[in-house]
Amino acid sequence: MNFTIALDPVEKILGMGNATSFEPAGDAPHEEGAPPGCFSPQAKPSRQERNMAALRRSISQVMTPTGPKPVLKTMMTTACERNCFYCPFRAGRSSMERITLQPDEMAQGFSRIQQAGLVDGLFLSSGIIGGSPKAQDKIIDTAEILRKKQGYRGYIHLKIMPGAEKDQVRRAMQLADRVSVNLEGATQERLRLLAPKKDFWDELIQRLLWVEEIRRTERVRASSVTQFVVGAVGDTDLELLALSEKLYAQAQISRAYFSAFRPVSETPFEDRPSVLPKRQHRLYQASFLLRDYGWGVEDLGFGADQNLRLDVDPKEAWADIHLRSAPVEINRADRSTLLRIPGIGPISADRILAARRQGSLSDLAHLEQIGVPSPQKSAPYILLNGQRPGHQMALAFSTK
Ligand code: SF4
Image 1 (spheres, rainbow, N blue to C red):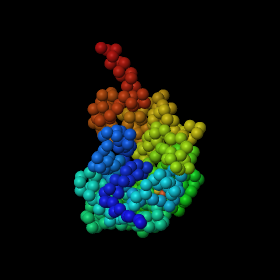
Image 2: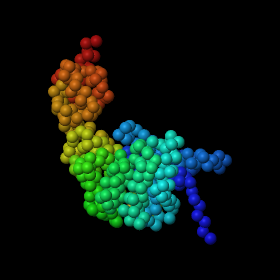
Image 3: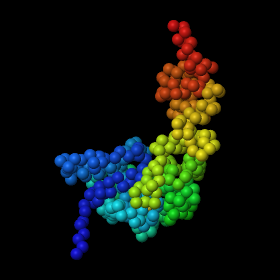
C-alpha cells in the first residue's frame, strides 16, 4: 500500500536546503550552515533547530536595485530529466532527494517565510520535468500568485529555462525584477562538453537576446544576468571574458557570474579537480573592468594558456607594464585614463575630476580627503603636480 505524506510547503522548501547554492542570485559567497558532524549524538538538534539550519542554507544576502536583501533561493523541483554533467540535479543521480512544489505551495511557503521577517526576496529556479515550457510555466505561475493574489511587491528573480518560449520570457520579465539565463559554457563546444542536451545558440543565447529586445522595445525593466561554470572542460579565461564583453555590450546583461567548478559525486565529472576560488575571483575583477571601467578584453593580460595570472589583480598587472615607467598626472588625466590606475574606480575618478575644478591635487593625503579610499595603491603609477608621491614623501622627510 502506498502512503503519500503531505508535507507542509515550508518544510518542503527547507528540505531543499542549499540546493540552489549552485545558482547565481547576486549573492556573496554562500554561508553554509553547520555541517552534520557538528552535532554530537548527545546534542541532537531539535526539529526547530534543524529547520532553522536548513533555512539559513536557503537564504543569501543579495544586492538588489534597492540595496542588499536576504533572499530565499529555492526551486520548484529538484528533479530533472536532463543530464548536465556537472549538476547535482541531473537525471539518474540516486543520492539526490527529489522534492517538488506546485505553484500555490511555493507561493504559500515563501509568503510564510517572508511574513515571518526572515527574507525579503525570492530567487526561483527549477529542474526540468516534462519539457522546458512546462517548467517555466510553474515558475511564472508562482510569481503570478505572489504578485496578483498576494500583492507581494518585493524582489523576485526568476530563472529562464533553456528553451523557454518568447511569451514566457516576456511574462517572466513583467513579473520579476531580474531574470537569468545560465549559459554555463563560453562556446557551443564547451557547452556540449558540459551539458550535451543544451543548445548554446537556440536555447540560451537567443533567450538573452530576447530579454534585451523586450526590455528595449516594450519598456520592461527587469535586468538580466548569466552564469558560467568555470574550469571543468578546459575553458579559458579569454573565452569566458570575450563572451562576457559581448554580452555586456549586446545583451546589456547586468552581470556575468563565474562559478568555480566543484565536483559532485555520482556525476561524470566526480573525479575532476576543483577549480581554485582565486580563478573565480580574478574573473570577477576582469569582468568588472569590462563592465564598469571601459576596458576591452584585449587590454587584459593573458598567459600562454589564455588564462589570467592568479598572483596579481588584472588591473595591477596591466599597470605594472604600462604605468610604472610612465606614470599618469592626476591633475590632467581624462576619466578613462584615471580608470586605468589601480586604486581608482568610477566613483574615485569622478571625485578627482570634481576636486580638480577647485584646484590642483598635490599629495596623497589630498586624494584621501576627497574620498579616494586607498591612494597608496595608486602611488606607484601616478604623478601629483609632476612629482611621484614617493618623491614627495622623501622630500617632506628630508626637510624635518
Ligand atoms: S537542466 Fe538544469 S537542473 Fe537539469 S541537469 Fe541541467 S543544470 Fe541541472
